[in-house]
Image (cartoon, rainbow, N blue to C red; front, top):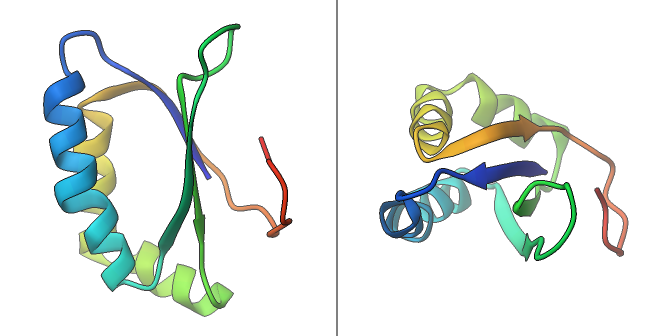
Length: 95
């Protein structure tokens, strides 16, 4: 699960990066985006992205790769208040 706010003025480049590189590369690594949420009101991060993996080993391999570090570092150039956490899957909204 990743939460963040998009930096003002970076929306277009953010969308191009997330849809064109970030999500497809993670999918190739076995990390599949299942939902993306937008917060329209309240003091919460504007975006919440949820991903699923088949096993904890998939996550360990992905996190250890230079691809992950590069992808995450670049995503953070478009965002603020960036947070990532690993949670057990539940078939409902999670925060």
